[in-house]
Length: 136
Ligand SMILES: Nc1nc2c(c(=O)[nH]1)N=C([C@H](O)[C@H](O)COP(=O)(O)OP(=O)(O)OP(=O)(O)O)CN2
Ligand SMILES: [Zn+2]
Image 1 (cartoon, rainbow, N blue to C red):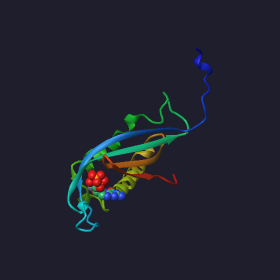
Image 2: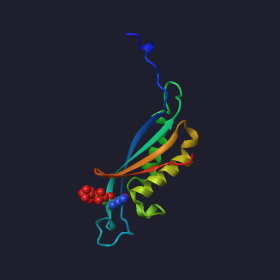
Image 3: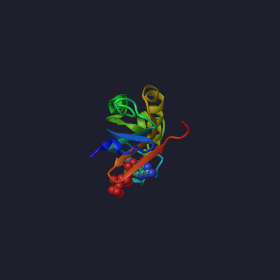
Image 4: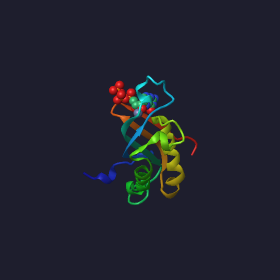
């Protein structure tokens, strides 16, 4: 079969990459009887999603490897920390996703092609929060 005859549709490209870190937290803003007001820990999963209307050679939005500084940031600053002790906000998944999007936009976005669309933070197998970036 001649695959050169397959039409390439118009559209946008999207990639995602997952990262992980282990951390403890509590949510002191919750009533004391709430289980999450107590100190506990999560194996956090973080997924960043990037989009672009066109590709860079050899056909990437951006090389997954170019996202390594984000992993380095998670490993050096958040991994095996108590999040409520180091972050200037109540460390819910929602606020963490917004914060990580902000760090990515400030520190990594200028050095890569593609635009950050969202950051998803998973605390447990059944719960997650996503921050969708607007206005870039
Ligand atoms: N909207 C949010 N709700 C809750 C958050 C959060 O970040 N955003 N965080 C917590 C706790 O930190 C913790 O993650 C508990 O989550 P939960 O899904 O309740 O965890 P469990 O494993 O205990 O859930 P079960 O499915 O009931 O076993 C709480 N809420
Ligand atoms: Zn928790």
